[in-house]
Image (tube, rainbow, N blue to C red; front, side, top):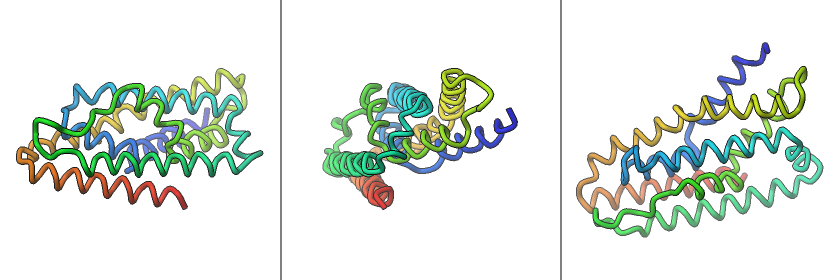
Length: 194
């Protein structure tokens, strides 16, 4: 498949650049460490793979036929990210009560309202699906490639959070960090709304 290198590069770019998933992983990594953030990483990867698979199997055609569905999902995702930003901003700064840890199921289900994940899934379905394979085989292949490439990319964001977490020993520093992450998530949500 001569589209393999562009597919790998696209998956790395979409998984490795700032987005809602990665902002949440930085915050979780800082507060909980890598091992306790791993369920969220796996949830994001699993949710993204399922989303890509169903998009390749035909769900993406619904967005083309009814663009209002895509706009509704974008609005729902933006509102949810703003709510997450609020929760992070008002989380207690004391080290004994960090913000709520992102669970596997929450991370997986978040992909359904994450605008960046939809862009990735629809682009993979429309640009990178192998035409010489059956639809199911091609969908499974590109979904697996996205998950394999995505795992180390998003893990780096959680590890970045772990590194930052070492400097968050005081409640004042933790408050500043939580506020910065909340503002970043809120701004990203508003940018994705356009």
